[in-house]
Image 1: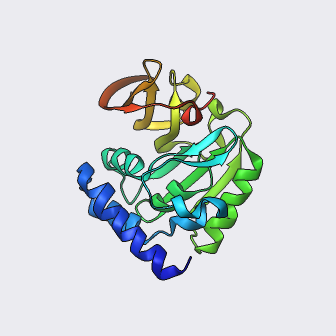
Image 2: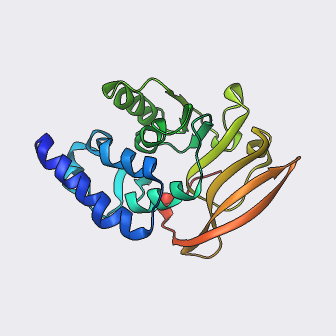
Length: 215
């Protein structure tokens, strides 16, 4: 497939998937319009790159549907001065999207091979305000770069670990899908107030096992 094909498919994705889901942030829309998602997708799945499908990255992990990531990011209110931690960054697509909107993005994953791929993908695009690290236990976050303005968990968990709350700045936020039933989750914002959190639910989203992180 050629660059022109992917470019047209990318713009159609924004027009037909992201905008109809009421995504308003202009910088976010611009980022999805310009970042080459095909770089972050395995070659044997290139025909699915800009469809509204989940894409298999490893045996146990799928890349979420792009319009769902866009809908989530639109609620995160990212700022240009933010330092953001992405937990479960996979091959780096969401990190690349955020790199155009914030000051710095740190991605961690518990699959070393995937972390290496993510680093190479970001290098291909010459993105300089991102870094990736392997962490066997994702529940511990990455304290070496803390505190963070925001933490985004790319996947579904059952509860938010205290260790992640401690890595937020005062009034920092964690965004994640909390699993509440077998196939349903709530995408929420957890606002840090002193050492506690206040949770605000944004919307329901379907949950699949391959989107669930062990945290």
